[in-house]
Length: 313
Image (cartoon, rainbow, N blue to C red; front, side):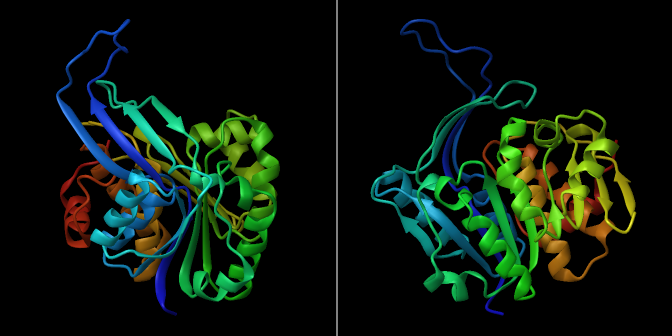
């Protein structure tokens, strides 16, 4: 296969600053300590971290015909990510966010929905898009053109062709479940955050949530639980619970997306599921130690050293 990892979905231009405790009233100005730009999003952060880890990566999504889109494409190129199938969507601006990071690392954001809603993978592109070992879809709920049935078709075809499939979402209410459910039967690993999983299921107990999502057809469910680590449940009854690393958090923007790429790195390397989860957590933890998605993730050797040398909670 031509690519190790294809990341399709939500790519966004992020401007981040910290620390922010409130928005200035009126026309006032507050000064911040740090400011950064980043390609982020459930597909964008994953693509870049996987590339930093040495995987051959393909990006599939959309940007506008604007300066933000120029910068997103340039930045993907900086990391060696193949952007042939990043579409320029003439009727949309690039999906963009202003992230106001709090002193505790929380990251309330102002987001403009953009070209993520407009791109579409047609049949002519499928051979390229699915020429990959691992196929990741990130950002269901924001991909308007693809969410209307096409994501399910592409995921099913990826499974038919023998790709390992992973899935992440951008979801906030149970109303988003109809967009997710048709994909789960073709999903090997579904990796929502605890907030996303609770919103989709309407449940609060993590065991109940995992069982609910498995009952929808996913091969395995991994809930990322922030400071409480991660839990893995699959159709065979396997249960794995792993604590988080002990770190000083700067910004949590993109942590789940970086987890997805670390987990995929483990799959690519043929590691055990537990080691894959550890790689995901190490990628996520490093991300949280800096401002701007993937900022502290350097390369695979550094991530492996972080795993060896960083205590867990």
